[in-house]
Image 1 (tube, rainbow, N blue to C red):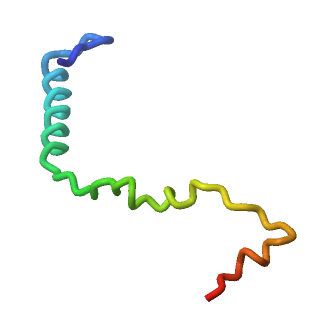
Image 2: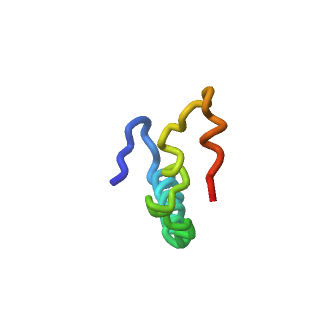
Length: 68
């Protein structure tokens, strides 16, 4: 529903404004939505970085070595 809030448009002005609104609505509806779907929560890379890492300290060198 469209309502004139200010002014006093002539019938021709109102018809022209309505034609523009209807044309824009029709063109927006005709364009297919090509946006990719949002990624799933489990594949979000930010999920991995949520845990805080331990700050380096005097024994930080020991945590970098993985014995075979």
